[in-house]
Length: 330
Image (cartoon, rainbow, N blue to C red):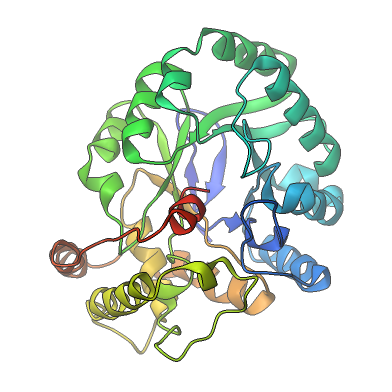
């Protein structure tokens, strides 16, 4: 496992992180992949730690706090070896966000309790609106106080779109921006966010690097999603669009013998030096073991990146319904 610096901090993050949305299970207003087995989730977390992953990304709303509780329970004895990132601002997915200092403080207090820790390595605002980003004086003061007290080590933002990411870099003095980035979504690259992050030495955290499993190449027209899996509520057009799109971008892989589709997709994200870590979700040990090998394989070849970019421009990226868009922006 290789490691990269988080922004201008002295924190070094594993190139492959652990996206902990999935292990939260059922969330009010936004389920992930349906019910989960906690024992399997705990084994996955331990496997990640043993394999060199030190970055675990969660939120107070993932499984209504269950994701944080699992991480706290499992990694308590290894706190000095792990970097925990969580988020504040959302109450739950079907209620309005609340970025008041009172709610942010209450949310952080709850996260610390569930995570069984007295500090957070990276605290992120969870999908703040442009208005929140622009009117941030109270939040910045609050963050500065938390840093001085040692309650948080770094501050970032998880954004709905690259546009908010650029604004956050300009207005919030963030160390990181978490944003959607994968072979089927190059907006973070083409919007100017990557350039802004580079200029300001801000790290990008690649969310949805496998596009909900579609870039594994294992989802096809006959795949059936459980009714509690959020993908079951997507339109057929969207599903077919991403199945066909995945086939096209995965065909840019020049060597299939030494890497899986999943590893190729993760390597695409890591080919950009401003991306500090990619955070695929993992529900079991096998997924963790497959994910981590992407770091050892290194960046893609230049011709593969160019072909992926060319193919992407021929592919129409769609959001067919609100449920999909909400989950994609989670």
